Structures are given as C-alpha cells and as structure tokens.
Image (tube, rainbow, N blue to C red; front, top):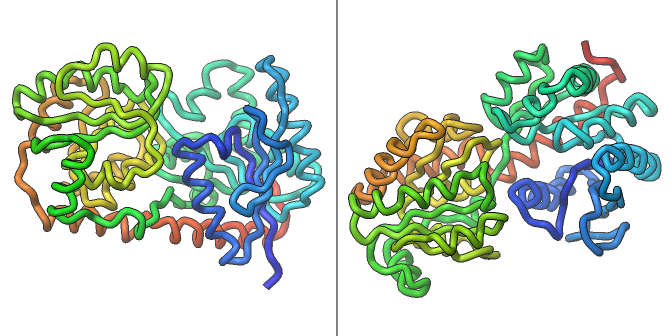
Length: 380
C-alpha cells in the first residue's frame, strides 16, 4: 500500500507539551501502521530547528515574528511554501484560525482536501472567537464552506458546526484518545504505597491536572477547598501543572492544597488519587479527563466540552460553570464516597469503548483515505 502523505498544520508542537500537543504526538506515532506518512507544520516559538525530526516525524517550524496580524499572514504564506515542498495528499488543520486559513488557501491552489479539528467549543472556542467581529465572521463562514470534513470531538462542537450549516456528512466523530496500556487502574495496595511515596497522607485525594490559567478556574477551586476539607477532614487537593497563575496560587494556597508543578509521569498521581476535578470555563475534550477515567477515577467536572458526553449515565458528577456551591458539594460527596469497584470498571469501560488512542488513529487514517480518494469538490 502506497503511503498517504498528510500534513498537520498546528500553532504549537513539541517540545512544548500541552494537551493538544500530547494528543497529536501520540497519534503521529500510530499513523504509519495505517499507511499514513505524516509531517507537522507549526510556529517556531524557541530556538528549535526550522526543519527537524521529532520522534521520527518531520517537523517544519515557521518564524512568524511578533506582530499579531503580520504573524498570521506570515504563517499562511510560509505554510503554503512548506506544503508545496511536501505535496501532501490531505491537509489536517488543528484550529479554525491560522491553520485552517492556510489549509483552505492551499486547497484553492492545489485542490488538496482538508480535514479540520475544532479544538474546543463554548464561549472561548474557535467558532465563538471568529464570531465577534464582522470581518472575522466572514472569515469563519468562508473557512467552514471550504473545508471538506471536520474531526468532531464533542457533541458541543458538533452542535456548533451544525448551527453554522455544516452538513452531517462533513462532521466526523473522531474524539481524542488515551493510551489504555499506559493508564491501567491502580490496585488499593499501589494507591497506598504511592501516597506514602508522594507524601500525600492517608486522607482522600482530589487531583487537578492542566494549565494554571484563568479559563481552568483553578483559583476558584482552591478558594473553595477549605469548605471541602471541612466536610471531608484530611482531604488533599493536588494541583499538577504550570502557567501564569502558578506563583500567586502557591502564595495563597490554604492547608491541604499541594501545587507540584509540571510532572512528566502522570500515572502515579492519578493512581494516588480518589477523584479527578476539572472546573474549567471551556474545554474541547480534556486529555487529563480521559486519563483519569481510564484509571477508573471518580470525576467531577463543569458542564463544558466533552465532559457531558463522558460523564453521563452516572459515570461522574457534572456541575454548572461558575457555581462554587455545586462544585464544593459534588467534590465533597465524591471524596467521602466509599470505594466502588463496579463503578470504576464502568468508567474504564466507557473509555475502552470509544476513546482509545489506537481507535483515534484508525478513524483518522480512514478519514484521510476517504478524502484523498474522492473527487475534488467545493463543499456547499
């Protein structure tokens, strides 16, 4: 089988590690098994080489400068040059702004089909961001018309695309995935041992993992922690991650809160925890939530992004955005609950059924081949 060449257009890639970068890197390692030859085109944010290989995958980094408007134009122009050199069979754009703009421009020149991934929905999502000004709104409508198909990761995003007139056949459910072998549930003995090793004590543990930014609402989570701890004495909140709020959060952390910074190995922290909490204002499909569920953890999350898709049917607790009382109550109940092996198995089974990283790679490969082998067309 002749390899199919697919160019991934993204704003950020390794060595920077966020949820989207971690997800893409994991998928890229699996695509060659399905006959896909990938390469990445991204912005250059540090001294990394312009042309590079990262974990065996070619990466081209674009120097865009600091002026915001010129940076977007530069990304597109230099991105087209990189695409001309690679000559992909399909372009996969990650985000509806510069990556999709570049992909659509290349499509007009080359008739190369485009798959786009909307990274998140809601008030902070791609569609909302491109709907605030008339000029951005026009740009959004053109992008949505010209893209051949969308990799949809949540019902929230699917509904937003449908509301914009994107037909059902162009909306493909291809959610993020998790490496099931890397996140096997912990035994009670392992949990106890890891708590000792990590210095977490004997009380119940709640875990947050993500960027320490306003949209994640970690500051609000920490504010309510004394109330949670009053309801569940001895409970500990572990916060994993870095960001602009890190120093202020550390300075104001109350008793029972531990900020441990960036961690390269996440499984021990999940294995030492009872509950995973995600109080975000907006999400796409949280990789940390997938990992927590693969570990069989109880989860408490705000009703944004894919959380309602994942935690429905009694698999977790959903709370309204901006409701500290509801968050406090749900967290306290989850931490005070007795261990439930049957529930943990159901939570793990939900991820095994629809959210494995191997299934994500397979679905993407299938989508790429269908797009590459159908006649070039302009979507309605």
